[in-house]
Length: 142
Image: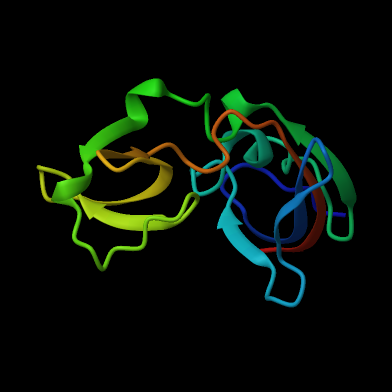
C-alpha cells in the first residue's frame, strides 16, 4: 500500500477534541478535509502525524498547544474605550467581531470583558493555549 509522504495531497476525516473531551471541530457530515502534507495548510502537530499513513488507517493524535495555535499571548489583548464602539455592535462575552487593524488588515477578535468604560478584545485564536486531540482517518491520497 502507498504511504503518505510530504507533498502528497490527502483527504482525512477527523474529530477534534480538547483534553476535557469537548468537541471543537469535526468533518462529520461534510466532505473530508483536503490538504497538501507539509505545506503549512493545517496546524503543524497534525500535519506531522500524517506521513506514513495508508488509506483506511485511523489514529489518535495529541497536539500540544505549541504545535497547534500556540500559547495565549497577552499582547493579543486590546482594551478599547466603550465610547469608541458603536451601540449596534453586540458586546456579549464570547462574541466574535471582525475588526480592521491600523494597517487595513481584517481580523477576528473575541469579546473578553465588558465594563461601562471599556471593552477588552482578544485577538488570540480561540484555541490558543489548548492541547488538542484528533481522531483521524485517511480517506485518500492524491
